[in-house]
Image (cartoon, rainbow, N blue to C red; front, side, top):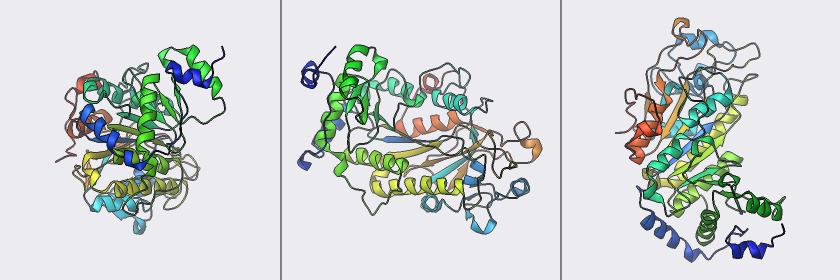
Length: 414
């Protein structure tokens, strides 16, 4: 099957375009998307710390003596800690997050996680992203179920749901369409094989074999509309504002480009980005080391994002997550092994910041999960559900998290 690029364009399939539109177009298409798409005008940014972050070093239970007893080599020095209250402190590399805490923009949730007992990264990530931890075969993501429930509110913008990275995460998988964007500065679009048009998809991919295609759309029509809007709005022209300086690397780039889409007002409701490298079995380090460097990038990226958006943060909430935590006791290699409960963050102007939410179970051996891990006292679905209802206005959590009986609210929003 031989198909020319011109034939692809005439047939309504997808083509490769480049940025460079007249900046006078900026905002024109965005206003149309907002008016036609409806919805709340709010954005939820999901950040997944893949690899199981050590929540006990990220949000340190400084008031619990067992933390110091079990971590002779990797416990954070008391003098380095960024104190939050009489019980908890932040890792010293999270200075940017401490600033958000002091401004009442950040809340931490500790001892949060999944009831799934697995210590497998892949199984735990699937359980958390599907939102149905007792049904491991579920392919659909909890955020996609939210999008399906509220489909009419944003049907006229292809940018309602966007994942930054090379592939669609399970969180956004399902019938509601989502874009996958690798890089806004150089982009193309290819059809997704999941929709069944394998012959056209194969032909298109053969035309552009070896080329970096930075946008993946679920259908040709969505892809064309995404390209048109990106061409007209050119969010890449929106340099970081308010002196924001993003860290180098994929995570910082993803956050910067999410901020560009929000500032361009394309109707973005859910954005997703990953940051990996949290599986610290060996040489985890204390104030410095592998974990500290990763936390620096993580915190600085979030801090830059909040600075960049400025007053637009009144309509944005950031939710961080990780599949599970690490063991209470350090291992023989100066690291930690797969655990259970961990810590997560919620950031935004509407957040009741300056608090550590959730019930702290303590680190005494009799309080641990299976005698070794921080116990889970807050189901991640209660955290995610509270963000969906309070920030995005969802009213049907039973469909988003089927089979889950909600626990007490965490009180993250005023």
